Length: 287
Image 1: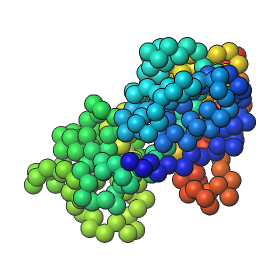
Image 2: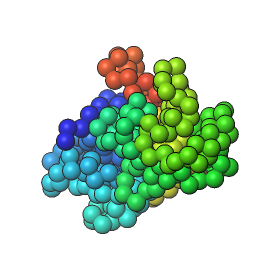
Image 3: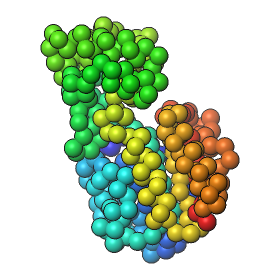
C-alpha cells in the first residue's frame, strides 16, 4: 500500500517543537509518517519517537526500530499507549488532526462524497460504529443534532428528515445510497454542503471531538516541564477545543501559549499542498 500524505507546516514545527538530540517525543496522529520522520531527524540516533495511530493500515507503513516505536490505538488513550511502550515522559507531543489523502482516495471507507460506490463506513479505527449504522438507525432528532453541531449545517433538520423518509424504502449502505437519499444525483455545486455533512458523520462515527479533548488533557500530563504540545486543526470545531484548552492552562499558570495567534501556511506551501490552506497550528509550553 502506498500512502498519499503530505505533512503540513513542517518548517514551523521544527522551530516550535524545540527538539534536540536525544529527546523523546510523540506523534499522536502518525498517519503516513511525514511528521514522525521530521521529528526523528531532530532527535537523532539517541532520541526516541513514539508514533500513535488508530488505523492499523497506517501503523504498517512505519516499522519499529530502536529509535521509533509505534502504538495502535486512539490518542485519547495516549497515556496508556505510552506506558505500554515503556516510553515515559515526552519533550514534545504533536496532534495533527487532518485527514490523509490516503483515507479519502484509497481506504475504500466512504470518506469522500465523490466515491459513490464505496460503503458508508467512515471509521478511522476498529470498533467504531459505521456511518451507515448512524444514518439507518439514529432518530431524526439526533441526526439533526449531529449535522447541526458537527457540521455546522443550517439545513440540518431538513437533511435529517430526508434521511428518515428515505430509509423507509431501504437501507443506505453506500455513499451513493446516501446521496440518493438527499436527492443529489450530481455533486457539482453541492460540494460545500456535502463537505459539512460528511464532516459531521465522520466526527460522529469516530467521536472525534471528545477524543481530542481527552487526548490533549492526557498528553499534557505526560509532557515534561518545559516540553511543548502542538496541535494542527483544520476546522473551527477542532480549533475552538484546542484554543480553549490552551487558554485554560495558561490562566491556571500551568502553561505558556507560544502562538498568540494560530500559525497558518504560507502561499508557497498552499500551492504545493492545497490541504494546508485550512491548517492552524497552536503551540504551548508546559511550566
